Image 1 (tube, rainbow, N blue to C red):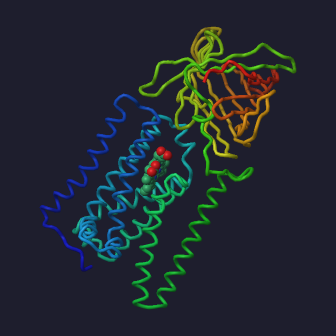
Image 2 (cartoon, rainbow, N blue to C red):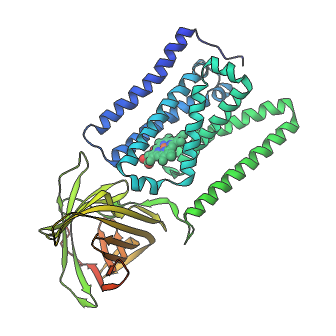
Image 3 (cartoon, protein in one colour):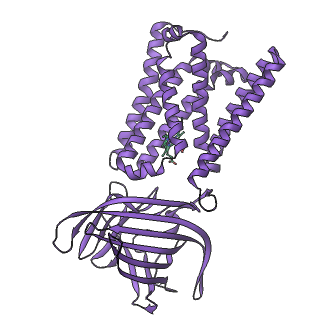
Length: 447
Ligand code: HEM
């Protein structure tokens, strides 16, 4: 092409060094700063976002360069075009660190990493990394000559489209939150199509129709594929409404001094009032950890993170359950979404006193958003969550707490209807009782 020019070999070598070392130092520096005194899920997410933005900026400057120059020629866009190879290399470095961030996430929480990973995400991730590797290794002039100009152009064009599609899917899932970025990505796609159409109309109208039809068929096939994948994930019940996440940050005010007092019923009879008080626990790095006390020596050690309320320990005078990785006490959920978890735990104390391994299965489904009336008080827009938690205590017994709870925004749990069942591992019922908890009206909650 007329606007391609090759820099002197020593200039090229220096620019390659800068485009590889610059993003690498930036990514390592960010990791050191971010993980210096806190290594938790929040920081890993922030690191993934930062490397993701680096990838996006470099990719747009590299893959979009010729289109941007075509429509907006200027010294700046020409500079972009001449240096697109270096932006491409910088993209390859950032994506490597993005995958390093994913490795950290997997290492921190393998159970939830695999539960979160959807099939389309996995396929796109593999496609993107394979194309990135292939394009990086063929980025030199020597490799271009060796594989031939036609094959080289095909690899770099289709590879670019594959990666562009991965960005498109990432930001499509973010909804309106990052609309400007989503529009930029769509803008680039439209400009590329326009440019191709311009070229084809100049050449041959039949080829233009052919290209138009092929693009339309491609779009229909991709959209149908994505739709089928998404339906497979949510086959039962109404489709999950992904436009708003109901987050525990808003529904479970975990802060020092918070307290809940409940009126209780067991097997249809009123029981004693139950009171929970939140006290501070030792922080994990910068992550604030709290104890939700049900009594002086009975508490859960919990924290808020991107999954919801996580539980580290459940302590009573008889035993201590330590979750590894941190279990989910209450997950963030989309409407109609169901999440299931399996978490290992170490149990110490109890008869015999030795430590043993246990397992907890959890299932949570956000069934509805509805108002709850308790006495004189109406709690608006409560999350109604159907849940079950089964603990295998490693001694041949399974305890299942299953039922429905309602969480009010800014208040926490206002109502809970549940059954507590104890069975042996062969399925023989040992004990079952029904329980109900209702937040006491005008209770002594100090927010
Ligand atoms: C298996 C593959 C992948 C997984 C599991 C994954 C996971 C993640 C996660 C967890 C985040 C943080 C999201 C948040 O804080 O809300 C993130 C951010 C991001 N990822 Fe990936 N990623 C994958 C592959 C990719 C690929 C292939 C691309 C693009 C080529 C990409 C582009 C991005 C971008 C741009 C961000 C920043 C999003 C923002 O603006 O907040 N990711 N990724």
